[in-house]
Image (cartoon, rainbow, N blue to C red; front, side, top):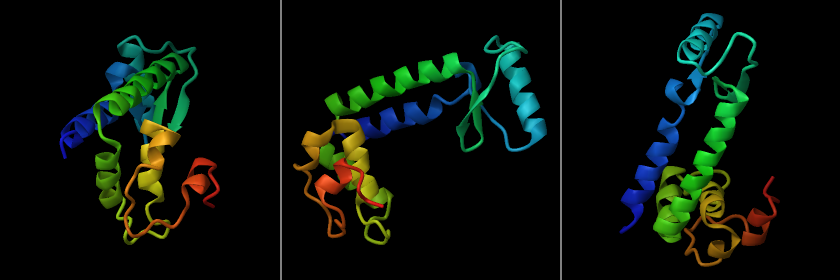
Length: 144
């Protein structure tokens, strides 16, 4: 597991990106939403005229912050591809997603490898016992 620590560091950076300082807040009530919007205004991310967009899971931001986040995540994906081992990422995610018990087997672990490493690496992965979908089905999103 030579590169797993680096993978986990990058994933932590990715999850920590969703902060006020980067133009994001999370709200689960109207009061939370108003408070988050005011916080973003206070630090200069939004003006009262800016439209907020939902990123799902209670998260909100403005378009320019969302665009910066996409660029940041893309750079993180490149780091993972360059600095991490696809098999180690698969093995970690196989266990993380509890693929032995999941109804879709190792689908989420394979999708993670696909996201970070691309199509070519999928065929190199030594898959766990719960490989319900073929590589072609995963690549072509024929898993529903």
